[in-house]
Image (cartoon, rainbow, N blue to C red):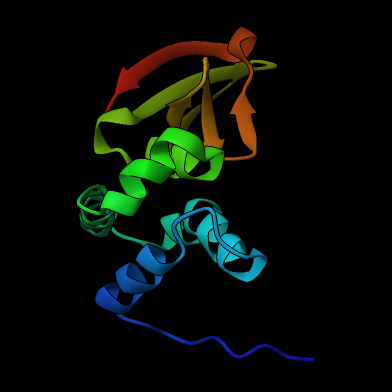
Length: 125
């Protein structure tokens, strides 16, 4: 079955995100996780910052941030002050990776960390 792609504007996305702040039922939780793993790449820097600011003005988000790992991951991913350019050397191949810091490591996306032994340089963006 083919899936149709729908476009929504930033405000529709932000309202939807606000309605899906964890903890929520599975369908809303999947959307929330997609914000950090899929939709983040589709947003401009400005949209990422606006969504981050929008969520941080929401009391439910602040409460969720204290208790919910998915919210903490979103926060780490979208925080403009938590963005890095991490250079790695893997088998002699240098590569720059856009990353964010989470827990004690650097991540390219919520499920992909950069192994410390390959990191040669970290620059805050």
